[in-house]
Image (tube, rainbow, N blue to C red; front, side, top):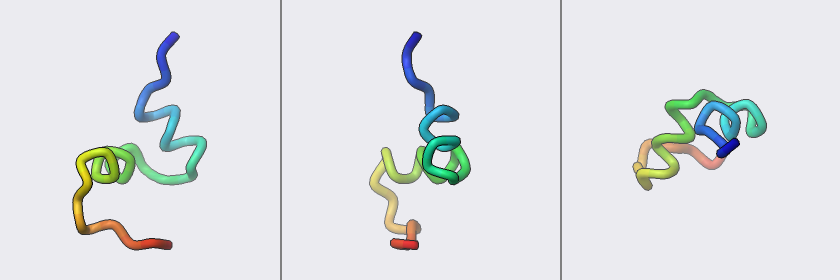
Length: 32
């Protein structure tokens, strides 16, 4: 089974939308 954005978000302790922004290289993500 492939890893989903939800899986990554859960492992990282962030929301799926944050994972999506990271993947898309958006500049609205803080280093925290």
